[in-house]
Length: 392
Ligand SMILES: *Cc1c(COP(=O)(O)O)cnc(C)c1O
Image 1 (cartoon, rainbow, N blue to C red):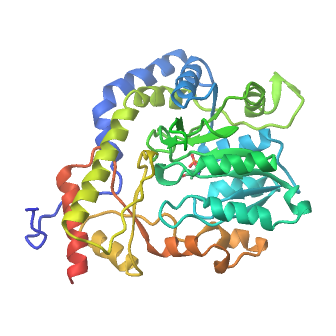
Image 2 (tube, protein in one colour):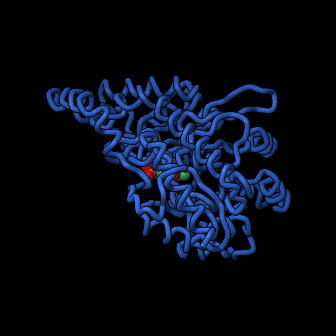
């Protein structure tokens, strides 16, 4: 590596730079959104339908239902599954708030099960033990497992699905960070994120691999009945206008967002490949520098789409973050407080000892810039600075 750190080469390496991507597709985006302006059809319509068709097929699901956000994708899926007061849903504490928030908002109880040390996804061992430790009465209240494909890598779906089947409960995939990610089953077959559970929940929040110009989301399912009910719940619970058999909400995806997403979707695989190349470069550079202090992300078979590239260091993590920030390098902590220790979930009665691996990860992980437009020299500069931090 040549660009000397001490020489004061002041590269900027933001955690994410959406303007770089916008520059490459600006004309197409303007044309596509202009169509919506001219039509004045802002609610549902052909753009939303086209996006749903494309994403169902991309995610190997029979149906896709566009919704207002990733959070709403989770919420409407649980509503569709009839989950409510008295029910329990098992999930990971090491995820974004919405995963467990959607459970609690329906009056159901989130049950947290710890994660695997190296992938940060829900640990099937803990899941099995957790279920086995419940009384038959308690277990009767468990209605779903909600694995999160964290950072863009699928959770251990073979075992999760086998457990769900044996206990007669459904699987709701939180695939918010995992569009296009693939799980390799023990028989060697590949399965796209969102195709394995009864519901697959996606987010198009701008920082996700497929990001809208605001909030948007999608639910995938291969269950015809579920798809029908999702579409009813999405529009206030009315199948025909002004007649309500069930209580739904306004969970619609905007036509304008669909127009933006349709343009971006064409580039999704190419952008994901760039993220994967960036991840390979980080790995090679950390190895070249002989940096054993850094644990790079574990990669299972299948396909990691690197919504985030998260390293694990020691308790010096916060000092490293600060050191990098001073040198123009943006990083982030996903997530500083695991959900079982969040104030809003204190009533559930968890302590740190209940999910120790999550607590450890929260103290030691750091996400580095990984977005597709990142330049090689920016990655080199980032690794050089991490290396120089450890030489202090
Ligand atoms: C982003 C995200 C969500 C929420 O999606 P929004 O579109 O921001 O509502 C839910 N779960 C996970 C794991 C996420 O990363």
